[in-house]
Length: 142
Length: 245
Image 1 (cartoon, rainbow over the protein chains, first blue to last red):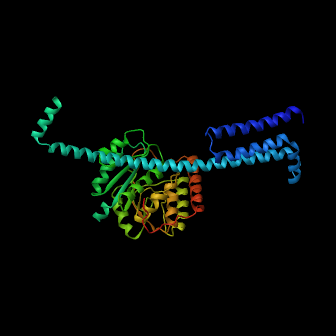
Image 2: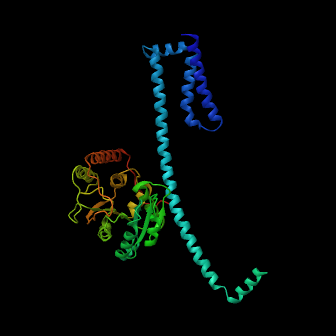
Image 3: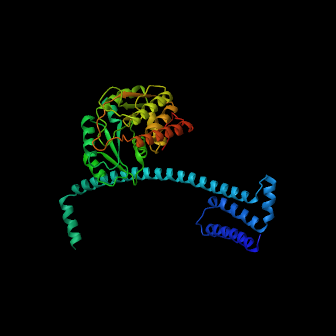
């Protein structure tokens, strides 16, 4: 391994972690969505700094070519992230649906109440006696 | 009979049905005096709401399109919150004859969910080819689940009694075909009694069912998928105490 690839590995792991942490700090990412990315970034950093850990882990599990272990773990992490996103999307869609239903029902209720109120006000105005109306008109003209 | 009609809510899901919805609403009121009618505007971009109001219906307007299942659940929730016992779905395109509602209501004494079936002898509605095979296959499957012979399970013309209304206000599925197929599975597994009544169906005012083989195949695949998912989901329990909503 050349110095350049060593540096590339460490820097890319650090960039990944930095982006995730910065987004967490700015509240652009919630903790539960960040978990998998932090796990992946930390693993990448460990392997980047100590490449021997990858060879050790590959031999431990019985993977002949260590880099295949990297590919396998990457795919697994991406899979978990995707599944988590799909599941949360489903939950969000269900919540949106409930909100849309509630909004439609409440809109209908508001319109009914407004109509009811309008007719009541109308009736109240009709009940005002002519004498009262005259004095009120005088008040407003002043 | 009349008092039952007063306790019945017609729910009409409408998506861009400005041409027919007013006439259908007027026909409902004319043929079924005392009934209440709620048109659920499923995110239409035309004047469906104004047309339905002009016909004298109540109108709930969804902010965006949720599909028939979503629109129906609004109806079930409205029925539950406003003390209606029964909910009957009538299509806004005029395919369902409001006269059939009486036939459905009569059978509701001994059932929780009454389907208006199209192929059960009455009327001249027919579907041919793969789409028909899909419907027959689904019916046979669902008949076994519901423990009663059903011949037309994709019919939208159906009436729900009090127990089914309570069940559906919470659990009516929104997916494509979920409103017809999955809802039957949900009802059957919640121990609702399902029966079917033959009704005459009219030809839709606008649009015709697709007979293209590829589309029919896609329909069959989606129907089978919907059925499979409905069957592997955990069944919903229907509690007999009225839940406070």
